[in-house]
Length: 422
Image (cartoon, rainbow, N blue to C red; front, side, top):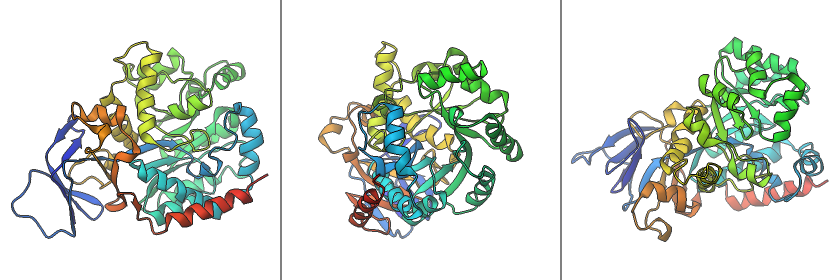
């Protein structure tokens, strides 16, 4: 058992609040949250928070983890040229071993940013899953069915395989995007959703061209095309959502779908600014993703949170838009629920022990006028003191505990990058 005491605890249910409680973990679960007890069991470790903040970990609700190998390659290029000249030729050379190491590299960055789970859509899923399990990190794999898959029926095999693979790994259905997936393949994915009563996800309305081309093809927007084939019959959502119309917003709100905003990537690729505040006011469920390191280029949730809020203030010409508390809820609670991790959404007895300690005794976190605003508006990865996943401390005070030396991961990743040069 591990005891966290002498600090502050951020809780979200039944309302967001800071408490002075202590927290005990037992195995992979939270065993106790409450006042200091005079008598308590023998702990394996007692962690004095020294006034720091214990909070639920951030959930990265959209990413492509192994794309770390493309970080800073082809920056400042137009999207289609970047994809055709830089990304696709190198992706064609990826191996299981490369994806394994490149995934671990991404996990190191997640942990140092206070991220305790990811929702990942990429390739070589067996190697990807093994990397997460070996590192002790929690992930949900999202299928990315598209026109280039040689065997579309592999999606069903993966769905069954990875949903009983390991306690840290699960799998959701998805297509890469409407513009990369033929109608018959989208309908096939929808049939799987019907068969398993499962939610579906996809990249959606990321660019203006994507949104306009869909209307030219089908006479309706991407969300409505997907609705027509039953894609969202059992819920799910979409990544990016930059070019949603008013009708699209109403549709997502009415059907309880998730919109995952990725502001860092959308800005760098000049894709657009998602109407997050309009979606929030309309009742859409909102979460946050980094997208891949190929387009972001960081996997830094503090930067994403700041951008989510600040961009909406400009977009709406309203400084009160998208307040810090709502952004924190998107990052912690909503992210967990979007990807099916309802046991990771708060700090309470019985929940999974996916926790982060934020150092409040740093210059950028002082004074404590508003601790929650500090996290969103002045917070930094440097403030992450500890990251725990599934009851195990994987990062603490700059050190990683994932079963492999980071320097070895860096060296292997750089060797793979050389081998992928085209």
